[in-house]
Image (cartoon, rainbow, N blue to C red):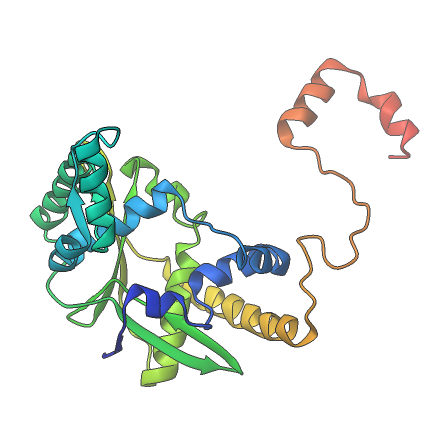
Length: 270
């Protein structure tokens, strides 16, 4: 299972839509469109990138980052900082480097990421839409994706909230379109960002895989239509209408427990 070798810039500067874009589009086309003109980078995303590179591509990390302990308010600190930047090196705090090392030690100690092909790009046109994906690692016919997290105990709760099933489906759709068969096992490896740097491995529920692929393929059809029509509706559609705000269980309990609902039901005709 071979893909293209590209830099991060080459991958992200491409016009193809990826799992990240599809997840935004599924929220609403308007949210996807707005994101194209916004800088969505955050400290959490920056640290995630560093962790991926440190754990999966340590040689590349050593060329791109350097521990920096000087005070930038001093002349020597400013000069050293500017020297790093001029060479294309991102200075990072020594404690961040220690944190990354501890995370890498935990992942490798548990043998969760075997040696293999790292950061290969797969890109293909599907029903008139250019789609791409970039698995973190492919080894022994298994795809791996590395995720950092705050608490391993929350992985199952957040797995589908963060749309990792969407990512799984995009991998399967793109690679199957290129190679003519499903890529097989896809494992998501999680590692905590603080001690004890605990780890976990998850895969998408097999009952969810097929349905999610259909969801993604429909999203690509809708995305194509938006591109052609230049109309990008929001969550409520192009012409929002008034709807009843459905009361959550806690407010229903509070109201029914404290008041006699008979008269209220009579007033609303129920």
